[in-house]
Length: 373
Image (cartoon, rainbow, N blue to C red; front, side):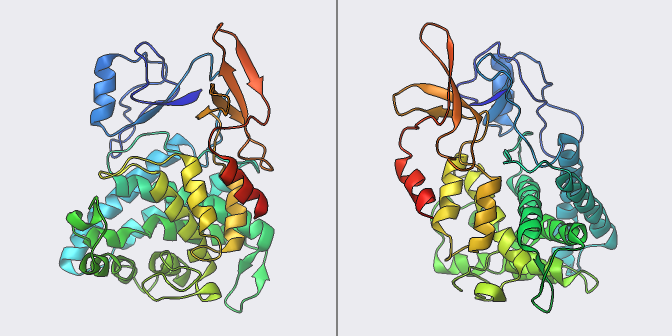
């Protein structure tokens, strides 16, 4: 299978995945195998879906590795949707989230943790396989998937840091469940932000930034006293920066909890590569470059080193432009040379050709920066 934009999707092409609209349970908009019509394209566009996975000869045999199954994503979507709805009411009444909402989210966190613990140690394609009509809801789920994958690999390679500052390698699954719950709740405070600020297409002014910077504290305050401080660390501090220039508490370096440092990378990557009302989604390589440029200033170098082993700039199934002007689709990626993927191209005579370590157009600087790092 391969990923194509809705604009380039040709009528008659079969879908490779069921397509779901966020918040609509188990009923797909379109089923896998359905051939695209103009009416279906209009329906997908109206649902906010800009890319779809298709089956054709060029994408034959490509099967991207995802962090969690579609079924888990739907369960997470439903649980987070209920929690967000309840949170809106809680903000108006001054109450926190109910025990039932926290319990449901904890169940989802455990399911995500179980699936991530059983993943093969390979680079993942973490793009949305379902489509979304509500950014905040889908963002929460995508950040949770990526954050738990990053946490698992970080804990396995470097250990998790306990309250004494000691690195430990035991009880990893329990730590993952905690960070998963924190990630599911990390942006709940954004429900307090006016839509005109949250979705503003231009730069926020000082007054608007003051409002925006309050959402981590508001979200943390919505959590009860029984909620683990590990969960609260993610909610309150996922916008802190290693250089101390983040918010809300201007923490720096190791003063930022390890969980929050992991959440920060996942949050920014997904924000860059997600579609919003005021911007189109950037491709994965742009998200990767944003993280690379922030190493040591915005982001923890240790987490970024793990990120580079988990998220590749050109995932399998993505179309790429080669330096010689041809267009190909990525088959596989060598983590030692992520900017030179293994690609398949369609020649003018209708034949297919596979190229190992293909040279891509316009990415020499990115490759040099990765090599130097």
